[in-house]
Length: 233
Image 1 (spheres, rainbow, N blue to C red):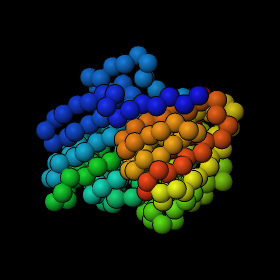
Image 2 (image 1 turned 45 degrees about the horizontal axis):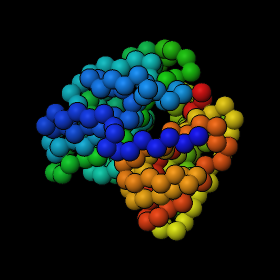
Image 3 (image 1 turned 90 degrees about the vertical axis):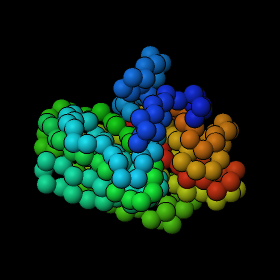
Image 4 (image 1 turned 60 degrees about the vertical axis):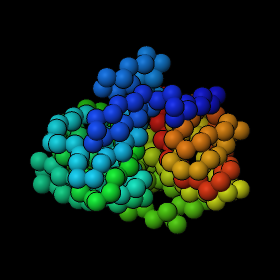
């Protein structure tokens, strides 16, 4: 089963400095049919104006993955972590027992990110943060784990959940396969281009909620960039 969720159907919030689209219920956007997908709780498509961002605020008991699509995001937290994550790269914050952080776009142009929240397997624990570059050439034509709590994903940023976040870039006409397997759910968002997911057509910004599909095949209609979350039910 694959349910296409068109970009135009997403929840939306416009704050001047922030143009946010919500794949799942978030803040003032509420849709009982879109509360979560397995352990995946939030997927926000955010455009952050130059010189603005999220002021310090707290989180706990959530794995928060940021995929930078354009520009860069600058992180700072109460643990002393500081970093700048550029387009194509990923940062992970394991909120654990509690962390206070800020995320600013200090660039002269708008920054676009996917912000993905996944429920951890257990509550509490020491909070942490990390960032890593993932050159797009290294995931050309194939899925690559960007963040993961699953065995065998040693090159990915660690998360404390039975889940993985994967990225792929495909040239027009190329395809890539991912074996989801029984008892798993997938959620795929097309960051750029157009593609078909097991025959279901997606355009830029669309989401695909995937369940009861052993094999996920993505076929690019034009050059495409995509992010996939594989999570427990």
